[in-house]
Length: 444
Image (cartoon, rainbow, N blue to C red; front, side, top):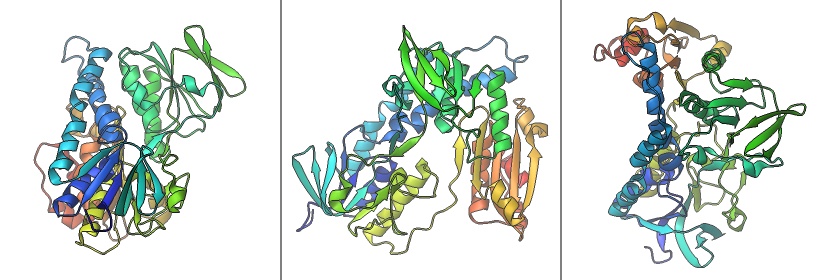
């Protein structure tokens, strides 16, 4: 507490943008509070990353079993209901664990929905006023919903990850992470999946030749792709649903997933009362994560930023604010290389400079067919390729990989990309053998 305000720092939301930084900040003696209207921990632990990877584990195992079919006898099948139960057992303790982590460090957690009254004051649930010297907007993203007739008949990602019984037919609208990852899971668990995309490109921020390999594999497995199709409406037809798209074309399905993206969760904060500037991409901040209002900051996915809207970005920003608010630094934030990955089967992951940017700059681009490499032959991967990008000084500045091992390979090479190691420096790094890390260093 302060003489003038209830708290020195007040966070709105309790996701990674908050809990990764609020607990260590409170441990320095700063008075900290966080307001949450939903589950402690926000999207990622409860209905995003953690839940998703728990559900995907069964898919990963069945894919490997499939490739080793002549070695492993018997065909594995996913019991979707048990998979959902397993996921819930893993994530159910997380809100309490995260709450304890923060309160043990001295953070006060306030349940309710906050709206701004002014640049130092929020009102919780229309009756409780709370003041703070600094306020951090950390409300993240929420699902975008199509503005079409029948939109209320579609479901979002949270609904999918809580389906106790998997529908026989699922139609997914969208071309991003959620669409492709959930299509992979549903297809592997036996659902008949159709993906409808507004444009031609899928996973447009990733190297398209590799994306097309994923699409071809999913198509071979029975997933139908309808591209360049604008969805017009949803309608109830008996026990099923009708999706109208394109030039009045129609399909009937058991369940609709609206995976058309996620948007900043700002509409119920009354930002106008505090004078905070924002647009449809998020809150505007400077290089200290400070909004146009000196006492108000923003962190994580809710920011209008060119950084990837992924958990590691929010975590890095949250830890930066801890240093800033505790007086450990006055420097502007300097972002590291933030890697991204799509948990399809195979995975596609990348870090650093993209292939397109490398081509524009005339950098060296080296592609490897990893399916020919002995390590990937151990589990008989057939779709496995990587690209390494070196600048004019021979420093590793970008990597992209498609394989089931891609996340581990990217993680292994990430220090070299962040610190721009040249080939001589990379040769000094000797990993454990035989591991994917060793293999990744050997290729770089």
